[in-house]
Length: 105
Image 1 (cartoon, rainbow, N blue to C red):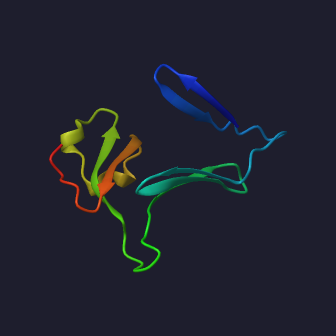
Image 2 (cartoon, rainbow, N blue to C red):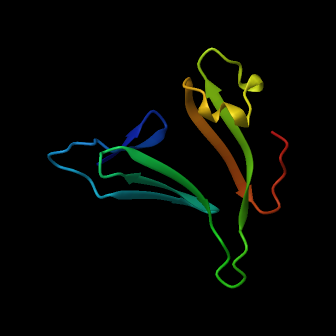
C-alpha cells in the first residue's frame, strides 16, 4: 500500500501484490462516515460506504445526499437504480454531509 500526494489530492494505492499483500481491510475516515476497502480471499475487493452513528443515540450523524451512476455510453441523467446490473457500470459516487445538509447541488 502506498500513500502519496498527487496533483492536489492524496492517493492511497492498494497494489494487490499477491507476494506482498496489504492488510485485508483499509479504512478511510471522514467527519460523517468512512469508506472500507476489503480484500476477499480470491483477491477481489469490496468497497463499503458507511455513515457514522452517534454513540449515545445510535442515530446516523450524517446522511447520503446524492448518488450517481456513471455508465459507459449513457448520460448520467439517464441512469437509474436498475442500472446497478449494467455491465457498463464503472463508477458510483455518493455525496454525503451532516444530518441537516441540503441537497441542492
